[in-house]
Image (tube, rainbow, N blue to C red; front, side):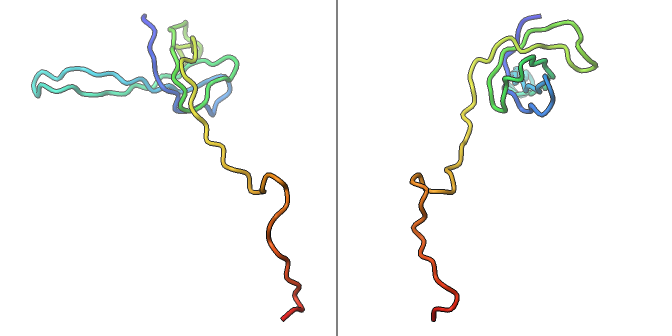
Length: 103
């Protein structure tokens, strides 16, 4: 089988990922292109894939009930959002403290 390219949608398992593969086909009746998505479970030996990564899958022998693919390579890494830290970079807060007895 030829290798397929898809996007990782889940990596919550150990050494396994779920990859969504999109394909277009022409509907002759309506003369339009239709998009279909297939999900494949794939083996990720080193747990390197993250959600949103674009990966290439190669077919392999059956590794489990639903897993017949292995991740051949990661084509493009997903950009992961890192929220800014709650503290300021200097480590000091600019808040003024008010004693409870002051009026």
